Image (tube, rainbow, N blue to C red; front, side, top):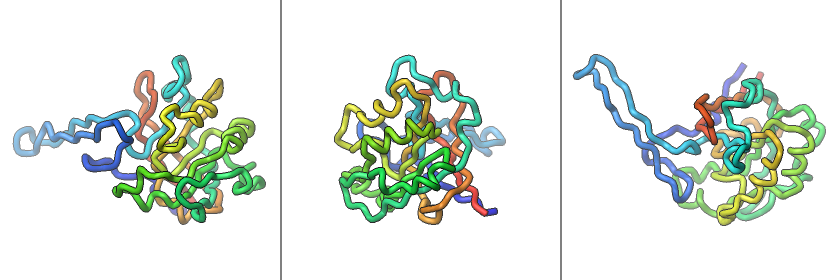
Length: 212
Protein backbone atom coordinates (compact mmCIF):
# COMPACT_ATOMS: atom_id res chain seq x y z
CA UNK A 1 0.00 0.00 0.00
CA UNK A 2 1.23 3.49 -0.90
CA UNK A 3 -0.19 6.72 0.52
CA UNK A 4 0.22 9.90 -1.56
CA UNK A 5 -0.34 13.34 -0.04
CA UNK A 6 -2.31 15.55 -2.45
CA UNK A 7 -2.33 18.57 -0.13
CA UNK A 8 -0.39 21.84 -0.18
CA UNK A 9 1.15 22.96 3.11
CA UNK A 10 -0.51 25.93 4.83
CA UNK A 11 1.89 28.80 5.49
CA UNK A 12 1.70 32.56 5.85
CA UNK A 13 3.24 33.22 2.44
CA UNK A 14 1.18 30.69 0.48
CA UNK A 15 -0.94 31.61 -2.57
CA UNK A 16 -4.53 32.57 -1.75
CA UNK A 17 -7.49 33.45 -3.93
CA UNK A 18 -7.32 37.07 -5.16
CA UNK A 19 -9.14 39.38 -2.75
CA UNK A 20 -8.66 37.20 0.32
CA UNK A 21 -6.02 37.45 3.03
CA UNK A 22 -3.34 34.88 3.65
CA UNK A 23 -3.39 32.76 6.79
CA UNK A 24 -1.87 33.97 10.05
CA UNK A 25 -0.05 31.46 12.25
CA UNK A 26 0.69 33.07 15.61
CA UNK A 27 2.48 31.25 18.41
CA UNK A 28 0.48 32.12 21.54
CA UNK A 29 1.98 29.61 23.96
CA UNK A 30 5.66 28.72 24.13
CA UNK A 31 7.74 25.98 25.73
CA UNK A 32 9.67 28.57 27.72
CA UNK A 33 6.64 30.45 29.10
CA UNK A 34 3.97 27.77 29.28
CA UNK A 35 5.71 24.42 29.01
CA UNK A 36 3.98 23.67 25.72
CA UNK A 37 3.48 25.21 22.29
CA UNK A 38 0.15 26.21 20.75
CA UNK A 39 -0.61 28.19 17.59
CA UNK A 40 -3.52 30.50 16.85
CA UNK A 41 -4.49 29.91 13.23
CA UNK A 42 -6.53 32.57 11.42
CA UNK A 43 -7.52 31.85 7.84
CA UNK A 44 -10.35 31.91 5.32
CA UNK A 45 -12.39 28.73 5.05
CA UNK A 46 -11.23 28.32 1.43
CA UNK A 47 -7.49 28.39 2.11
CA UNK A 48 -5.03 26.06 0.42
CA UNK A 49 -6.19 22.63 -0.67
CA UNK A 50 -9.83 22.97 0.27
CA UNK A 51 -13.40 21.87 -0.34
CA UNK A 52 -16.48 23.83 -1.47
CA UNK A 53 -20.04 22.59 -0.73
CA UNK A 54 -23.27 23.98 -2.23
CA UNK A 55 -23.54 26.40 0.72
CA UNK A 56 -20.51 28.24 -0.68
CA UNK A 57 -22.74 29.61 -3.45
CA UNK A 58 -26.34 29.05 -2.40
CA UNK A 59 -28.12 30.37 0.69
CA UNK A 60 -29.71 27.27 2.18
CA UNK A 61 -27.35 24.95 0.32
CA UNK A 62 -25.88 21.96 2.12
CA UNK A 63 -22.95 22.79 4.42
CA UNK A 64 -20.00 20.45 4.86
CA UNK A 65 -21.00 19.52 8.41
CA UNK A 66 -24.33 18.23 7.08
CA UNK A 67 -22.76 15.79 4.60
CA UNK A 68 -22.48 12.19 5.76
CA UNK A 69 -18.85 11.34 6.53
CA UNK A 70 -18.95 8.63 3.84
CA UNK A 71 -19.17 11.37 1.20
CA UNK A 72 -15.53 12.23 1.82
CA UNK A 73 -14.14 8.82 0.87
CA UNK A 74 -14.35 6.73 -2.27
CA UNK A 75 -12.68 5.78 -5.52
CA UNK A 76 -11.17 8.53 -7.66
CA UNK A 77 -10.11 8.62 -11.29
CA UNK A 78 -7.42 11.13 -12.21
CA UNK A 79 -7.90 12.49 -15.74
CA UNK A 80 -4.81 13.55 -17.70
CA UNK A 81 -5.19 17.15 -18.93
CA UNK A 82 -1.49 18.05 -19.00
CA UNK A 83 -1.47 18.44 -22.77
CA UNK A 84 -3.73 21.50 -22.50
CA UNK A 85 -2.46 25.06 -22.73
CA UNK A 86 -3.48 28.08 -20.68
CA UNK A 87 -7.19 28.83 -21.06
CA UNK A 88 -8.01 25.56 -22.83
CA UNK A 89 -11.20 23.66 -21.99
CA UNK A 90 -11.31 20.23 -20.38
CA UNK A 91 -13.81 18.35 -22.52
CA UNK A 92 -15.97 15.30 -21.91
CA UNK A 93 -14.09 13.14 -24.41
CA UNK A 94 -10.97 13.37 -22.23
CA UNK A 95 -12.66 11.23 -19.58
CA UNK A 96 -12.37 7.43 -19.83
CA UNK A 97 -16.04 6.62 -19.28
CA UNK A 98 -15.43 2.95 -18.44
CA UNK A 99 -13.03 3.83 -15.63
CA UNK A 100 -15.15 6.81 -14.60
CA UNK A 101 -18.08 4.49 -13.93
CA UNK A 102 -16.07 3.03 -11.05
CA UNK A 103 -15.16 6.44 -9.61
CA UNK A 104 -16.89 8.51 -6.95
CA UNK A 105 -14.59 11.46 -7.64
CA UNK A 106 -13.05 12.81 -10.83
CA UNK A 107 -9.71 14.56 -10.35
CA UNK A 108 -8.25 16.61 -13.20
CA UNK A 109 -4.48 16.84 -13.55
CA UNK A 110 -3.80 19.97 -15.62
CA UNK A 111 -0.20 20.20 -14.43
CA UNK A 112 -0.98 23.66 -13.09
CA UNK A 113 0.29 22.85 -9.59
CA UNK A 114 3.80 23.33 -10.96
CA UNK A 115 3.09 27.07 -10.77
CA UNK A 116 2.22 26.98 -7.04
CA UNK A 117 3.96 29.94 -5.40
CA UNK A 118 4.41 31.74 -8.74
CA UNK A 119 2.41 34.52 -10.38
CA UNK A 120 1.44 32.14 -13.20
CA UNK A 121 -0.72 30.19 -10.77
CA UNK A 122 -3.30 32.98 -10.97
CA UNK A 123 -3.29 32.94 -14.77
CA UNK A 124 -5.67 31.39 -17.30
CA UNK A 125 -5.55 27.77 -16.20
CA UNK A 126 -7.52 25.06 -18.07
CA UNK A 127 -11.10 24.58 -16.90
CA UNK A 128 -13.98 22.18 -17.54
CA UNK A 129 -16.83 22.59 -20.00
CA UNK A 130 -20.51 22.70 -19.10
CA UNK A 131 -20.79 19.15 -20.46
CA UNK A 132 -18.28 17.89 -17.89
CA UNK A 133 -20.24 19.60 -15.12
CA UNK A 134 -23.46 18.00 -16.39
CA UNK A 135 -21.78 14.58 -16.57
CA UNK A 136 -20.65 14.84 -12.93
CA UNK A 137 -24.20 15.75 -11.90
CA UNK A 138 -25.93 13.12 -14.01
CA UNK A 139 -23.56 10.32 -12.95
CA UNK A 140 -23.96 11.28 -9.28
CA UNK A 141 -20.29 11.70 -8.53
CA UNK A 142 -19.45 12.77 -5.00
CA UNK A 143 -17.18 15.51 -6.26
CA UNK A 144 -14.68 17.01 -8.65
CA UNK A 145 -11.09 17.96 -7.84
CA UNK A 146 -8.54 20.10 -9.67
CA UNK A 147 -4.93 21.21 -9.26
CA UNK A 148 -5.92 24.83 -9.98
CA UNK A 149 -7.09 27.65 -7.72
CA UNK A 150 -10.63 27.50 -9.06
CA UNK A 151 -13.25 25.44 -10.88
CA UNK A 152 -14.25 28.53 -12.84
CA UNK A 153 -11.89 30.59 -15.00
CA UNK A 154 -10.03 33.15 -12.89
CA UNK A 155 -11.89 35.99 -14.67
CA UNK A 156 -15.38 34.58 -13.98
CA UNK A 157 -16.40 36.49 -10.87
CA UNK A 158 -19.93 35.03 -11.13
CA UNK A 159 -18.59 31.49 -10.55
CA UNK A 160 -20.85 30.15 -13.29
CA UNK A 161 -19.57 26.57 -13.23
CA UNK A 162 -19.86 26.35 -9.45
CA UNK A 163 -23.48 27.45 -9.68
CA UNK A 164 -24.28 25.00 -12.46
CA UNK A 165 -22.77 22.13 -10.47
CA UNK A 166 -24.29 23.02 -7.09
CA UNK A 167 -27.83 23.95 -8.13
CA UNK A 168 -30.15 21.59 -6.21
CA UNK A 169 -27.37 18.99 -6.05
CA UNK A 170 -25.21 17.78 -3.16
CA UNK A 171 -21.69 17.49 -4.51
CA UNK A 172 -18.33 19.01 -3.52
CA UNK A 173 -15.53 20.81 -5.33
CA UNK A 174 -11.88 20.40 -4.32
CA UNK A 175 -9.36 23.01 -5.43
CA UNK A 176 -5.57 23.37 -5.18
CA UNK A 177 -4.69 19.68 -5.30
CA UNK A 178 -1.09 18.64 -5.93
CA UNK A 179 0.99 15.50 -6.64
CA UNK A 180 -1.48 14.07 -9.15
CA UNK A 181 1.09 12.85 -11.68
CA UNK A 182 1.55 9.39 -10.17
CA UNK A 183 -2.22 8.85 -10.20
CA UNK A 184 -2.98 10.03 -13.72
CA UNK A 185 -5.14 7.67 -15.73
CA UNK A 186 -5.63 5.40 -12.73
CA UNK A 187 -8.22 4.63 -10.11
CA UNK A 188 -7.27 5.00 -6.46
CA UNK A 189 -8.84 5.15 -3.03
CA UNK A 190 -9.36 8.83 -2.22
CA UNK A 191 -9.89 10.53 1.15
CA UNK A 192 -10.65 14.24 1.50
CA UNK A 193 -11.58 15.19 5.04
CA UNK A 194 -12.80 18.71 5.88
CA UNK A 195 -12.93 20.28 9.33
CA UNK A 196 -16.27 19.67 11.02
CA UNK A 197 -17.34 23.15 12.08
CA UNK A 198 -20.86 24.54 12.28
CA UNK A 199 -22.43 25.86 9.06
CA UNK A 200 -19.27 25.11 7.09
CA UNK A 201 -19.27 26.93 3.72
CA UNK A 202 -15.87 25.44 2.97
CA UNK A 203 -12.82 24.02 4.67
CA UNK A 204 -9.15 23.24 4.22
CA UNK A 205 -8.79 19.48 3.80
CA UNK A 206 -6.12 16.82 3.98
CA UNK A 207 -6.48 14.98 0.69
CA UNK A 208 -4.72 11.66 0.21
CA UNK A 209 -4.70 8.85 -2.32
CA UNK A 210 -4.11 5.21 -1.43
CA UNK A 211 -2.76 2.89 -4.11
CA UNK A 212 -1.62 -0.72 -4.11
